[in-house]
Length: 221
Image (cartoon, rainbow, N blue to C red; front, side):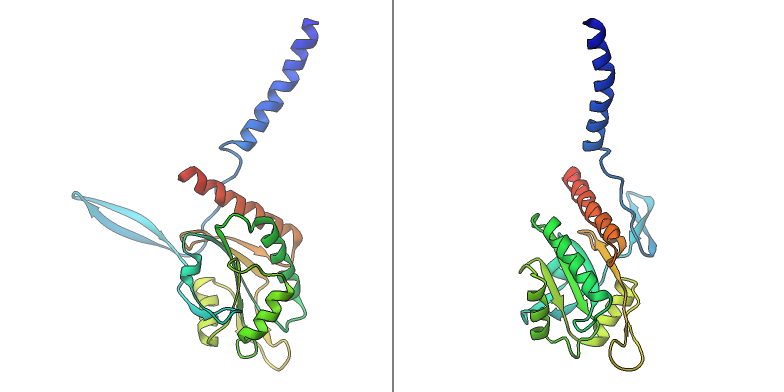
């Protein structure tokens, strides 16, 4: 009987320890921070200190699917997932929007997340058209925003803030060279992940990384 008990302890204890580690402080690896970094020199009490300033996404003022003016403040203090699309796209955009529905369903109940879908065809993607698109994808008010506005502002935002390729192509139809990427932005406006928004497993990683960010913030508070 003692031998059976000892054998059980030998088998069970390592398994329990593993589970504790996986659900404890080692549950998530720290996420990288993407983008250029600049040195910031400061002097405190006569001591010179050099810190790193990470790239943060820029500000914007655009219209939502409800014709409301939306600025970068909508993401202040929240985690955001960003993509660039257009409503008449029949190739990658439907796949990406379906995957964002999955993110919305899986991660949308925390109150600390926003989804920002910027159109690269603002001339045709009016707020009313975006409203139809949003309704088609069951976008939850206050969570998933479809944004339109001046073309130059949106394209500059894509290039300079999110480092994405969002440039007009040639000819008619789907003449936009836009990215299939989803970007994960933390509460400080820093890029923490880049994912293929058409790939089921890449989006699974995105969902896991949202959980990792939430965990990191919970430990810091």
